[in-house]
Image (cartoon, rainbow over all chains, first blue to last red; front, side):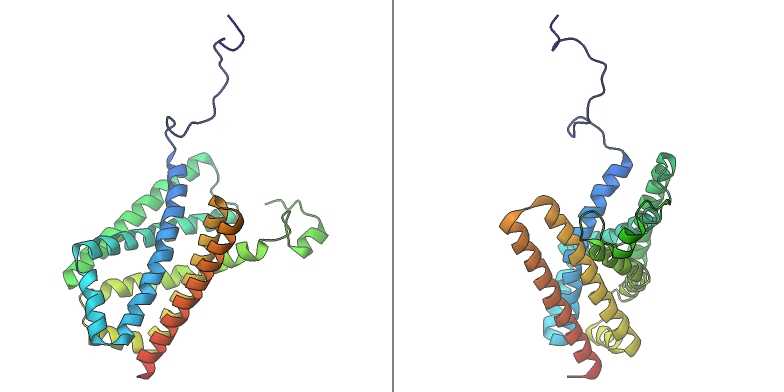
Length: 132
Length: 126
């Protein structure tokens, strides 16, 4: 048996297509994705006040998009992105201060971030739809 | 945490890349400021669900809301352009990198200033 074919017990580096990423890694990717989404969302927020200043007709056009199915999906995604990026951002600030790096802690507070973000989004939607 | 830097390095505060501390610090400072601002804004937005044009304008035009809204949009866009700059730096290089970063910063300033003018116009009636 040649050297190249000899079975090896040496660890392989994780390959993205076969390796199941841990929750912490997925949340890291999601933090960046929601950050980019919120950057676009901030422009949308600016557009909202610009339309509000422009007059009732312009604002009606803007609102008709918001109350459409696509608009609702965009706003829902925007709110989830906001809550997730907020919760995970607070976790990042704790990391910056040197806390929460232990694997067990990082894993546990990953779940806290996900649950708080989902609950905040759900509560916002329930309250919002009751008011409409 | 143990600080392994020399006193001179700490005083200069530049790090190994000789740049970037200002960016890092601005990102954190805006993050901390955005925690209360974003919570306030999210609650306000939910409470405004289904509000008509006049209600929204009256809300935007009240003095406290004007200040908080200008802060939210201004600090938020600053935080956003700092973050998007890092994303651009991670995935592009050369002329693309420079052009995209300049574009991102121009867009942030343009939308931020337009939003502030809009808020002031609603508040002071124009």
